[in-house]
View 1 (cartoon, rainbow, N blue to C red):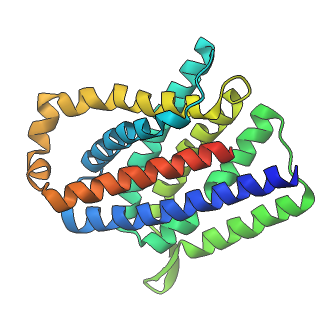
View 2: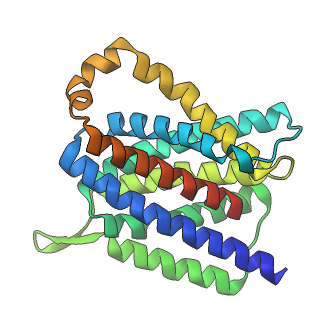
Length: 241
C-alpha cells in the first residue's frame, strides 16, 4: 500500500515537472513565433494526439463499455477547451505565475470528487488545500495604479483548470471499469477526431495563412517536443489518477 501511495505521488510530480517545461516552450512560441493561441492549440493537440500513438506498446487493451468510450471522448473535448484557455493565459502572463495557478485543478478535483464520487479529505489535507489556495491567490496579484489587481490571466487559468479538472474526474470515474491507458488513448484520439476536420477546413487555412507561413524546421522541432512532453505528462498524470 505504501509503495502504491509513493508511486502515484512520484508520477504526479514528474508529470507536473514535464508540464513546467511545456509551459516554458508554450510561452516562447506564443511570444516569439506565433500570435494566435487558437491556431497553436489546434496544431499542438493534433501532434499531441499523434504522439499518443507512441505509447501503444503500454496500452492495456480489453473490453470496455460504450459509456466509458463516450466518457473518455468527452474528456478529450474538455482537455481541448482547457488547452485553449491555457494558451491564451500563457500569452499574457509569466510562466512562473501560470504554474502556481495549476493548484486550482486539484481544488476543483476535490470539489467534483466530493459532489460526484463521494470522495473525502482528512483535516490535514483540507488545511493543505487552504494554504495552496491562499498562495495561488497571492501569486496572481499585481500592484498597478496604486492598488492590488488580479492578473488578466487569472480568469482564463481558472476556466482552464475547470476544464482540466473535468478531464481528471471523467478519467478517474471510468478507470473503475477500464484500464487508464486505454482511456488515455481514446481521449487522445477523440482530440484528433475533432481537430483534424478543423485544420482541414479551407476557411481555417485562409484565416491563419500567416501562421502556417511562420513554420520552419526549428519551430516544427519545438512543436514536436511540446507535443511529446505534453503527452508524456498527460500519460503519467492519468496513471497517477
